[in-house]
Length: 128
View 1: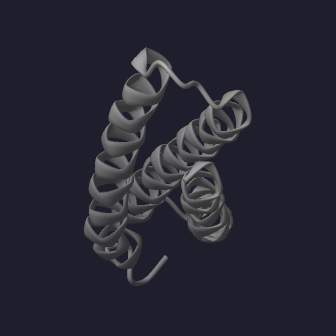
View 2: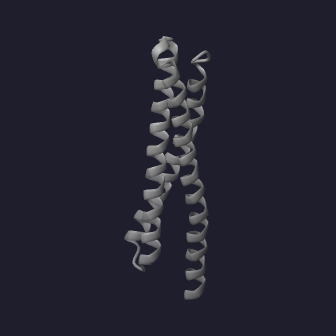
């Protein structure tokens, strides 16, 4: 792999995605705690938010695996061993595909989060 450092240059971007996803998870966990401790529990919203938390967890796992793949491919490429040179490219591609899967889950989370928020507002207005 001639440009062995290329996979490593993607890692900071994934790191920022991990950071923002962690912030989403913390916020969602706090919302869930508030809903669970609230007197008027809306079980359907709580279950949907728990599913959202699970989606974010999967996203984080995909991002972690992607970082591992890209770091390993950079290491293999940096060693410049001819017999495993092609494997560094394949591992890089695998890391990018896994990162894209994580992004897909973030998109899924975003659409569902808006839907859940709309349902929360609608249920509050229906009670009044």
